[in-house]
Length: 334
Image (cartoon, rainbow, N blue to C red):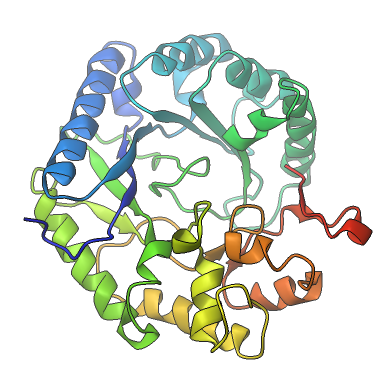
């Protein structure tokens, strides 16, 4: 019997490798062990009637492989591992210069199909690095030419003050600890947009806490598992965060932006923040402009100012451009 009411779905089970795990003498064995753990957790959750969409592993940084050639070889090996997706980690502004080139990013992502790679554009004090920001722009342009649709950019992200050990890709990367602990850190990314449709807003915090308890019971082989209950949507009304917010605001599912939207969005973000459970990653309200049905259906009446206003209380995917405004088209610019 499921430890949680129906409707709970795990978007990703992400297992984290440390720098110690990536040493050449143990890398293959640790990757195999991480993949085995991820597959075992998927079975445990499925046996508890909790669907799992993907399993993933996340590394600290390609710089742990000492040189770009070794990193590329490792990326190709990871691409053939029994796992759905892999993050090679993030490169910091102070990484070895040989890694900080558009050609390195393009060589890794062109040679693989399930590997992600990121660049951190902020310094340790949180201030943006102009050099890293410029590099990110050049990388995005280079990656756009690899595939006619530009889809390679979905496996790259320019990060700013993003914390490690989050389960969602492409922003996921493992903390840089050189720990030799035998146990892996694990984080689950939850399809939390679905949870918004299952109860009144005032019960959301308790619903999340109940879900976290059920998930921990199902993942007994990992006592310190953490969770990201971000409301990342998927195509469809029942996985639309915007549709749920519109309903909380007193409107229909296709009326995002009506009076009360900002208050409803803030209330959802607060409800997630108040929930008590081991947290990882962003763990908040995210409105993905290019992916959420509840936003797409409102494209003719949504304005950039409305989205900017909403971003004051939650994450909003403003990496889009309003080109061809006369046709009310939303075009992804990544």
